[in-house]
Length: 206
Image (tube, rainbow, N blue to C red; front, side, top):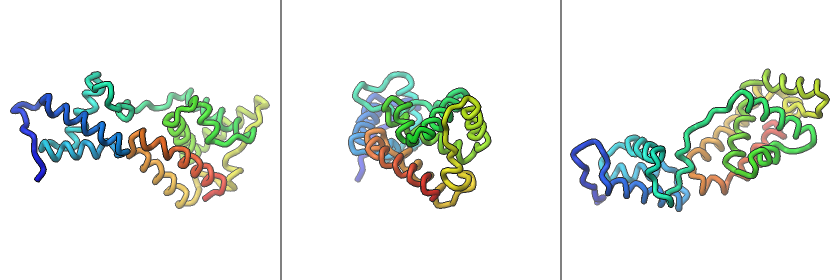
């Protein structure tokens, strides 16, 4: 039978519970498991809700309470793209493709070799192709007006990405969902494959 830790009488966390949380996060990271697995295990032992465990984890990390050996990359807050970042991303990728450079190689270069940052850039670029073709085409027109070689991603695919097949969208969504559930220690191992698959899907118009 699973041992249940004794909870304090107040709503706060005891030192023992906090130590158990860090240990679970370490174990999940070492095993390549998502953080939610660590939260679920601790919730089962303590009788707390998994969401409560998750909330405490993020609050503790934000407050700087995590031990130095506890991975906290997944606890970084979501940072939306600023408008100028979107414009720079589009210009860089479209110009790179005009030189025969793949999206994957371009985002890796833009990220300085940071694989997590590269995936973030790649996902944003794909989302722009699907949902904001007018912004992509505006960037194309600006590059052409400046005399900078660029490639039309819609023409290369032979059809509009926003009108692309369900299979392509589903495949990309599945890849993104899988990576979002992984800790960086495991997700990084699959990032190169995911980026290659995304490029193949785009090139073939799958």
